[in-house]
Length: 339
Image (cartoon, rainbow, N blue to C red):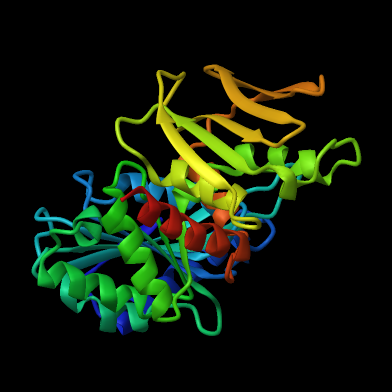
């Protein structure tokens, strides 16, 4: 259920949401069903300049709400907007398995013409759910680009200033500019997450498990060198992150190499000590093998982590991520060493 609202003013949008909830409740009562349960644990803002005018972002938010109920705000920057700002409100509802009661979250979809994007801040201030975290997922690639205009940067700053945490995705982005953006944001006390780091979970967990196990023959401190093989045309954020994460505790030497692999990103991680070598490698499109020179071997699935799965994981960490922050700091050192 949705309603168009013109012009876009926070008080008008909130009034529209109120009418929407009233209508949903009355509909449920007329049908003799349990009342609607209104759920909200955060405000999730997605800004996008994609050509679909926010359709993908809207669909993703509706899926994320099942695990992370929120007031979803899709801010699509598009030339197709008939007005400077235009909006509609709707409810995303679902029934948990075996339950009769609907759980509903509210969603606000806003289209903004590019020239209005720098001025979205005051509108968003009035739309965030009171006393709850504000998570900003930036899919506005123009604003994140090193060639971003002053207006694009102003719009990005307006939204980031409201956020408890900002999530970006540096897959395919130029490495130096991507790292500069994160470093600058951190220097200003902001919490930044990168989905390229989140994609490494199924690499990091097995490797961490090796050294947590009592069967491990050598402590991490004994591995003096790390080799990371990747299949990207250029060094990517995820490749540097995994090297930074492994080498951060004891400043092990890190080498990167490009090879033909089974897909983009990291292909193999090799750790070497005087007495043991550990290889963790993609051995097929959907499988990975962890081997040690002491005879241990184990296979893992290589999951297809779509954006919904990645965001679901990232939204579970609303505060600072010490593991990412440490890996990022070490990654910056590795980049400087490569120059």
